[in-house]
Length: 428
Ligand code: EPZ
Image (cartoon, rainbow, N blue to C red; front, top):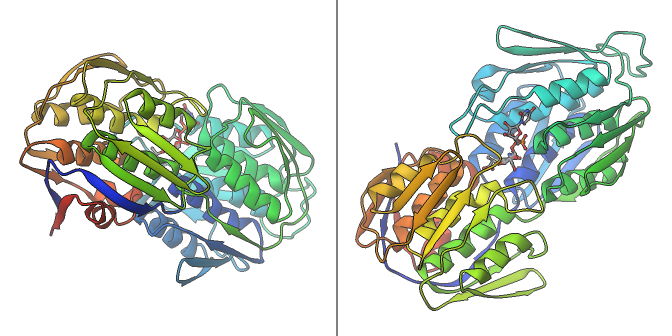
């Protein structure tokens, strides 16, 4: 089990390049299944989850070439319409192959993702949407079996019939639910309207890629997306958008530790809520083109956050702000409305001396002057980022264990933090 050793107390100064967005790259990699032409992607981040997704696609028959930051995928010969449990259990986003497989081949067999540390995270909305589009779906031995009955106008000879357009209302806003059904609708017969759709920038980035492939999509980024299905999609090239959560994570780290950092290859327009909260905490922020500069010369002020679907405050930034609040001036409340168990980092922060009381989905943090370094354990991706931030501001050495969580979603994080002056190293 790899660990990170962090000596706290150094300010962060310098430049850091933001990588491509994990949560845009994952659905876009799955979009390669929608065409027999090749899809050329750039700015794909070098992450464990991205490597897992590549392996999953390759075991289905997708040919993948990597050259530099470029990934070229070709799904001309798919010989397996299945996502096995051993790959889905480590990465829930594998569910994103379901929509593309069903709409292009008329059938699919995808393992149910199972729960994860932050919540049960069902996929009932994905399934309900595909059923509305004509797929017969049953769950058996932990697998989702989807089949589109023959005789529904499929042009290509393979597998089952063709999905048909439908009007689908999401009871809950679901990011990958929206993405799965948008991809399914791209090749369906007729128009699909997704209501109460997710508005996340990663959904928009996927839509841009699909449109470049020939899909007819309107309204991505709003809560109503309409997709007019086409017979075939063709190849395209697409550059993955910058990772807004990686951007937010570095900005919060600098706001907590103090310093002057500049993000490059970033986008401020998709981080407005986070930037406002950082200014409320006392940071000064300058955004220009693809750079975001943050200066923080004093102790941050505590800020209240309440997570909700985009464009509200992102749940993926909740743990990082809690870390900043542990050493901020004053008290703050953090309310998590998306996932039912996304406070796993609280007990780890308490080991560093943080004063946090949890009541249901609300946590009250009383800022203290100083955290004391200790050995702590990462439990999920964003919680591990939170613990790294806490280690940067704690006095003495902090050891963060189980950092495989971190490697799933942050590209070379200790190298990027060291370049900003942090005293951080990986213990084998
Ligand atoms: C995406 O997960 C992200 N992952 C998550 O990022 C992010 O936290 C989440 O959206 C919310 O923004 C990817 O994009 C790969 P949801 P997703 O479906 O799509 C419930 C990270 O750290 N729900 O928007 O799985 C669900 O339980 C990860 O990068 C259902 O009930 O999240 C949750 O409470 C963590 N039924 C809420 O909706 C469904 O069918 C939102 O989930 C689907 C979801």
